[in-house]
Each structure stands twice: as structure tokens, then as C-alpha cells.
Length: 404
Image 1 (cartoon, rainbow, N blue to C red):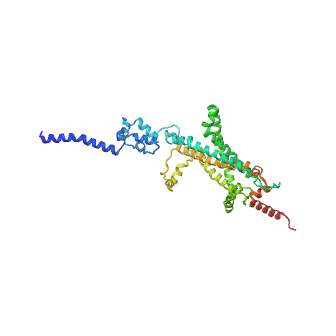
Image 2: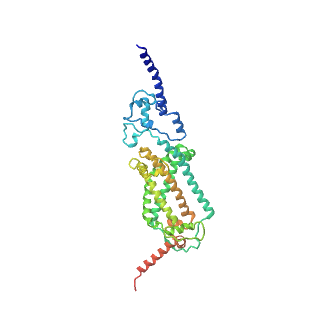
Image 3: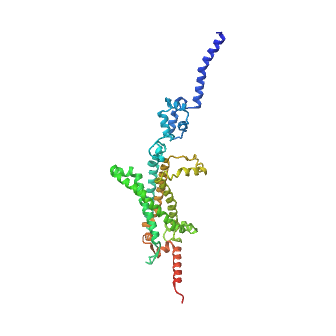
């Protein structure tokens, strides 16, 4: 062997480790997880603890039959193609072929991360802010009662009665109101039972209450939806906004000052606000309730998110596009959160409605309790409606009087 060939061989042997080191350094620079064998780094863990969103594709993309087999071996340094880390990773990202006896869509979903987010929202912001909202409304009404007192008629009652609501209207109202109260109570029991009721009576006593409440909630919902449809059909024509509503709102409907009685037809602006709140929130809560009763047949959020993304709604608020592929469990979790959020807003509004219709205003309960109100009350709160009613009665009386 010549001296030049020996020098060339030694040069190659010396260059190889240096090249490998340089390549490793370049790989480490381009791939921060190269040093950990492809798994998450300390920075990933710290970022998650800080609440920052990290790209988990280095895990989620390494699942399923089309994944690179060498990548499975590299991950966590496991041996063989089928390993526990690879299996659990596939389960976590719902990308594994399972054989289950039940054929429901949810049966094949073994793990899903969104459950922890749902639990945190349910036990945290939902329960906290929802409870504060109801307490704030009760406190506000108590302060209003203390400052304003009960709203009474400015003139003596005549004793003459006029028909305000007929029997079928009152039936629809009380069907809706009674079912809503039952739904509200049982829903609050389910949400606050763990923190408010179990500490008082214990788990054993609370269990039958929770089971009965769930049964009542699921079945009384049908009465609520029937009542909702009925009142919508009966009163929607009377609740179309008009210019009179602006005048009513401008003086606060006379609620804050005695002697102020803005003209109104059958429903004033305040009642119209209640009506449309009931209609919009009622149908929304019914839709999410049906989605919870039939989660596999009536999923609603994936399709909704897809439409919102198409209109670019998330971008208006600086958000990323919403997720449009949801596991059945995620559909149920989102439906439950939406159902509860709408319910809290709904209950807060209805508390104000109950107050005005009972102790807040003299004679208001008679309208729905007996169906008839005093003529003085009708003149002060719904003067235009009373005029229309009297004009119609006069016209009917004239039509029924035989000509001489």
C-alpha cells in the first residue's frame, strides 16, 4: 500500500465522525425532538403547563396503518412495530381499528382529550358564572322592589272585567311555564348536586334524587316543547315590533315612575322582549336538548362549525377555524355546555318575568291566573288594546242588533 493511499484512508476515517456530528447537530437544530427520540420535549411539557397551544402532530400523525413503521420504532425507543406507546397513541387520537360488541358510534371511541376540557368548564366557569348570574338577578329584583315597591294602578279599580287571555292561551302558557320550572330545578340539581346537596344529605340520599331528576328532565322536556310551539303560534302576530315599542322603552314602560302609562296594544315592548327571548332561547335549548337525547342521530355542532368556518366567523374574533370532525362524545359535551349556558340566561330572564307577573305589579297575575283583568288595569297598561277590544264589542253588538 502506497503512502498516499494510506493517508486517504485515514482522512476518510477521521472525517466520518465529524460529518456525523455535524449532521446530528443539524438534525437537532431542525428537529428539537431528535434528542428525545421523537417524543415530546421538556419545552413541550412546560408550554402545556403554561396553557399554550402546541403542535401535537408529531404524535397524532404517527397512527393508523399508513403510518411510517420506522417512526413507530423510533418513538420512545420501543422495539417492534406494535408497541404499547403506539397503541395508546392511536387510541388517544381515535385512529385505531377496534372490534366491539356494541355498534353505536361512541362504542369505538375509547379515549378523547376533550372530556377533560368539558369537565373543567362544567365544574368551573359554567357552575360559577351561571350561579352568579341567577344570584345577581335575584338581588337586582330585590333592590328594585325595595326602591320602587309594588307597581299599583293609579286609579281605583272599577270591578268591570275584560277578557285578557282565553282558556287555550292560558293552558299553553302554564304548560310552558310549569315544565320550564321543573326543567330548571332538575337541571340545577344535576349541576350543583355534588357541591351543594351531597355535602348536606350524603351520596346515598342524593342518588335517588339525581336519578328521579334525570327522568323528569328528559320527559318533561316534551311538554316544554309543546307549550313553546303553542305560545309561538298563538302570540307571534301580536309581538311584531312597531314604533309604539320605542315610546314604551323611552319611558321605561312606566315601571320606574308613577303616573306614566305609555300606550300599548295586547303586548307592550317589555312583554315582546320576554316573548322573543322565550322563542329564541326556547328553540335553541330544545335543539341542544334533542341532541343530548339522541346524540348519534342528531349531532349539531360539527355541521354548525363547518358553516361558521365557511362564513369566516372565527376570524372575526381572531380565532382559528373551528374543529369540524368531532367524536360522538365531543358532540354531547358541546351540546351539554351550550344547553346549560342558554338555560342560565333563560332562567335569569324568566325570574324577571315571574317577578313582574306576581308581586311586582298589581293585577298582572289575574291576566294569566283568571284570564280576566280589571278595566282600570287594562286602560293603564294596554290602553290601545282596550280601545280595540271595546270597538270590536260595539261592532259585534251593532251587527247582532236587528234592524227596525
